[in-house]
Length: 179
Picture 1: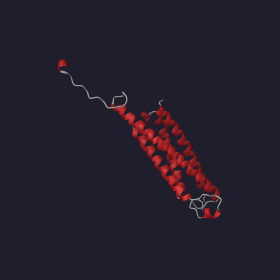
Picture 2: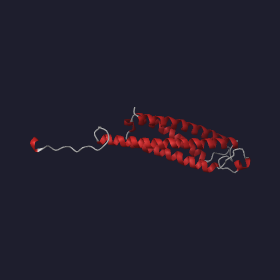
Picture 3: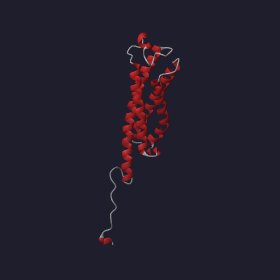
Picture 4: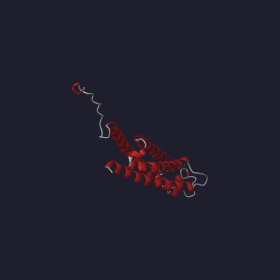
């Protein structure tokens, strides 16, 4: 197993850990709402669920690129995950708008905390969720780069007939002395 595969596998483990944490925090926030949860929290739950679902494919494909079907598929899946976590992190951060989770007046006007049974707790969980969304985004962005490098290497290896990167040499035609 090469350095790229080891790096990719380490990133996959971190992505799984961050996705599970985001899912747990989002699920706990969703359970605290009285009349339904806000879309920003639901979107964080979607991003983590999509991530965990795709990691079922990405773990084996990271170890053995032959299992990926086509090398560019890993790049596409990593890009989708990076987009989901990026947008979820932006949306949740823009909806929280709270620096102090103990200020009751601010929490009542907040879109994320106003319908919660325990607004200060929900505020802290939302901030934590947002932090882990950004950590997961960083991991998926790094994975996207590593997957792209692996896809380009496998493309070069398949063109060169398995000899490594570079272009394949054209077939030589017979010389006059061989005819």
